[in-house]
Image (cartoon, rainbow, N blue to C red; front, top):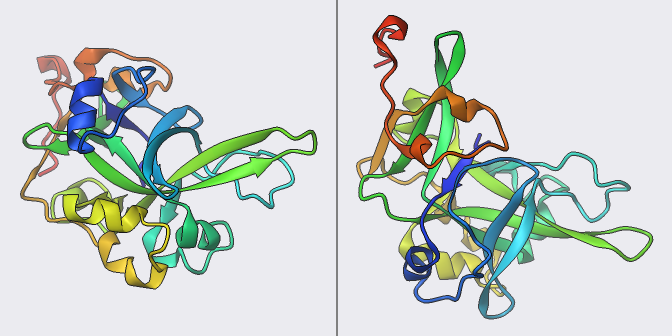
Length: 230
């Protein structure tokens, strides 16, 4: 799964990787983006634009805005009622510069690991979005991150990973006229040789708190060192 991620780059860096698409100045560098919080994503209707969503997809037919669905399995997008319509017409790309998974324990706390590009550049995760309306005319824009099988690096920590969009696949994925049956290959796991993996501070375990230093590699104090996992 993907339950936390970071977008710690500044606006100019994000715009560069999005080929000049203007990014809302409200976007602030964040290292601990958590479910239920605001997430920026790129949609196309028909031209690409940035929009803000609540992380946790709420299907339009839901009676109440209960806890949203933070991840969607790539293998069953066309089958699940919560996703199949969005997969056809409401695809999005979610900028990030890292994501986290947990394995092992350090000083009694679960050990978070960070995945990021070796060059530390921004990348895009595949997502789906929906619009939920209440009886009073209000609405919520919500989003989910698609996950796929792990590559050789990710499987060291977890059995799933985000579906990462290769640069050449971003626009085809966003295209509102593309057919979902022609896009499944985009959701295959990327190779792991351009990616990095390292421990980060267990303080990141708390959602809703931020510290720029938490994206840096972390070495446990000597008295808390644990055997390496691999």
